[in-house]
Image 1 (tube, rainbow, N blue to C red):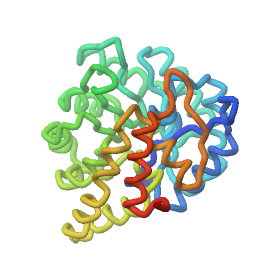
Image 2 (spheres, helix red, strand yellow):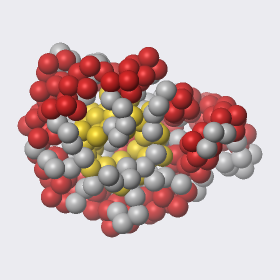
Image 3 (cartoon, rainbow, N blue to C red):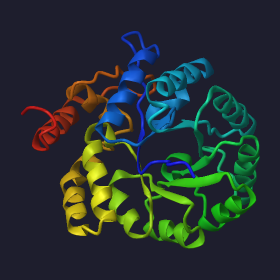
Length: 296
């Protein structure tokens, strides 16, 4: 089985001063993330402002990341939409281009019932030979993929190998693990729940904070797996304020802002996203200084 990674970064998408995709900068960022401790990359996820990317931009972004780190870590491509046909088209294009796997978000806005979610994911999974990670994030999509539905999906589509569980519900995470033992992978979809998810049998995190603290997240996972639970807890508690701060406003606004301060300018945001309010930005920079990520 491939090594899908345990600290997987949901990578931001760099833009130039005119708001155009900066593919070269994306390759630089991917290399930086891997060198810092990330052992997987998600391209064109929500953190990558995927709703505003064109098909050509998605292809250029994936090509840049594969060229930069595709021989070192597993590269997932976000291909899920709220339209099954479009998701199949994007998934087939990602496979043809060489993506290692695809990540499919639960269809947003449509609010499909569980039977609709099952049919949607099965149709997309059957259209590819790639490993598939499901991304369950009810707070953004207004629908929740229930554990029993996920278990049925994995039974019907064996290339569904992982879930990014961002419901914030540890009972649900535990039920997923109970119904789907390893080798199925269960990833925290929130950095603040990495340690609790590991404790109920999870496999790691699809992370935003790893743009800034990948090395510490790597140490947290390694410490927990080695039985050094107190050490893992200390890392978790140190980073908890950062985990929360990165969602003071819509992701990826805080992390992209913080990246610029720590020395990697990934550009601005595509509308309808906008820059952080000044007071919030001051608070975020002060927190980064407390964590010694930037100078005071």
